[in-house]
Image (cartoon, rainbow, N blue to C red; front, side, top):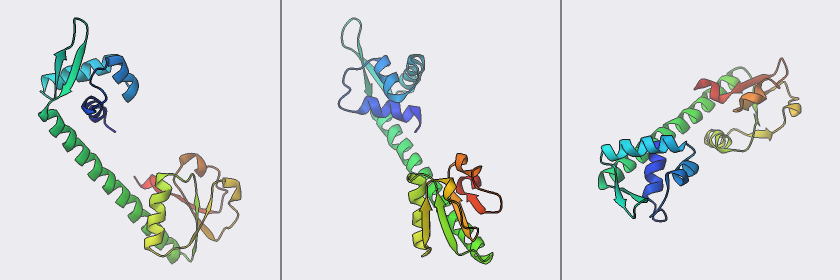
Length: 171
């Protein structure tokens, strides 16, 4: 997720009434210098304001404008994620239909059972396609199956002559 959003979200959480730039950097996975730069930009834009706690400490407060920006960013992220999921589903459906037209009726999923796997399952279930699952390329043994993968490192392990498609190559 966008570092701007992560920073606003972190500062907006109730548990972070007093924090340091080092703690922010560790939490969102960027350097302290990057945190400092982002905070300055957000302060200049009116998204964040500071409050002096003592001689050496500041508290960062997300302004109403910052909360509105955070909501807008969350909306855009959610919308884009949904569109990406739909693209994976539509691509899976097309690949399956193309395979059926080539006379291939067996589908085998090859990869880790992660979020992409779950999305592919949605497409298979929506189209009443039965499938089998393997997580080891050494188990690729049926030349009459379509092997759907989503991890680049699994591609090179598919033997010559087997029909396989990396779903994420279409993006």
